[in-house]
Length: 246
Image (cartoon, rainbow, N blue to C red; front, top):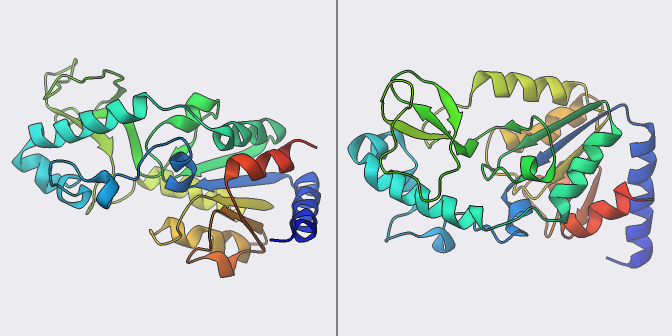
């Protein structure tokens, strides 16, 4: 992209930021990839010849919870060694600029909170949280390695990762919060998401239909680029500072 064109787009977005009363940010795995976290799907996420789609299911956990927990323990060890990148920190800075700010993430790594974001809507759960299969209590567990299989401290029941697995529905509360944010946004950023996983893939179109100005930041065009008012190709850690810092 020519420098002059980039500067024009940056200026247009900053003007919208200056007038916005409500801002919503949606993030996907592309943001955490800049921190060195693999997607855990496809070749880079292959573990002991298992694919994520074979392990991240209620059926797999019911059949062999130890195997599933060994996989998550491996993932947690990788994530624990990573740090938020500039994109995560700039999103946390954006939050401080607006009293009405919502962060919706498809990521489960917890890096947004580590960077200072508060109360992100974690659509797919959080790898550092566990849920009891007996009493349903949800709690943080940062053990690396984790005891396998882990047991609930309250009732002794088997714990599972607090993750939305393939074949499971998103938590209604998170969907309700997301839809409310989209319906009342003046400006929306879509960062590092491929735009193919529903329902998040529809969020940009929903926000724009309600009057929001929608901006995409991604290294390449995506399945939802055509929905955007402005699309910036590049890393969030390099582009967001141009918007947040005058």
